[in-house]
Image (cartoon, rainbow, N blue to C red; front, side, top):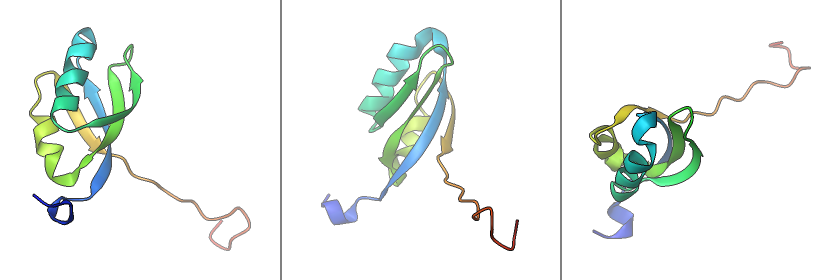
Length: 82
């Protein structure tokens, strides 16, 4: 598959079984996740993955949820919307 045929990467935030954190994170890496942050005590991590690989992440045993990372930009304090 050429690079132009791959789907664009998206940011994701995942909740996983904290008792199996290291094992689940390794399985997620093998499924295509590039890990950018880990919070093992909370059982959460963040990363990026090709959009078409999100279902593969959801299928990993020990994954409780996969949410797309979104950015919300608020208007400046002096804007008329405030």
